[in-house]
Image (cartoon, rainbow, N blue to C red; front, side, top):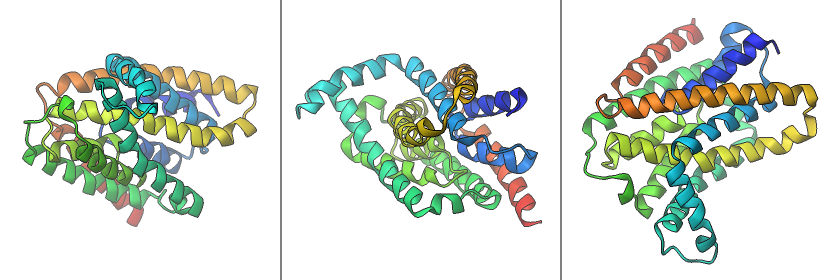
Length: 267
């Protein structure tokens, strides 16, 4: 893999991971539209680790709180704010892990990696995000997160296994539909990404360990560092913009890209 391709991949993953425009969809499209060779699982794992580092750093106070609550949770106690947050994040992650494993075992996940599927997902779920953002309430805050809402957001998150849907986009859609304010809904969606990325990284990591070599490790480290910087920048900008701007600009981008991909796929 050339350095140019590595930089492009890392930047795409970093910039799109937390924006509601689907990082996986963009990564799948890259070789389809440019002729680049598939980046392989080593780079996939590396860039995801880079973006994981970015979201952990940005929401460090929440992450530290949840981490401190894990020991109490393991003893069956959910009597602190941190233990409650860790519990709800775990519950919200279960659907995507189970359905993701099922798709991988059956091989159906490969059937979804097409330009047409990504185009339809970009378009449809972009419009769903617009509907939820425009009609959703703003009375709930992130500290109001309940077991019911964690389950519902977890089920919505599983839909993001369809390439082009966007994990952050669909969980933000769910949060807005449930009545969370934009910034609070985005915060919950970003925190939900941490155990999800860890789970997917662990799944891919098992296969990577057996095939990686020194050169692949070096490229992976480079990709992870670039993805970290890009993800931290895009996450910071998005969270600041949400104080005054809706999700409509992302919806417009999704609709334009989705329509363009459908034209490309069917002609």
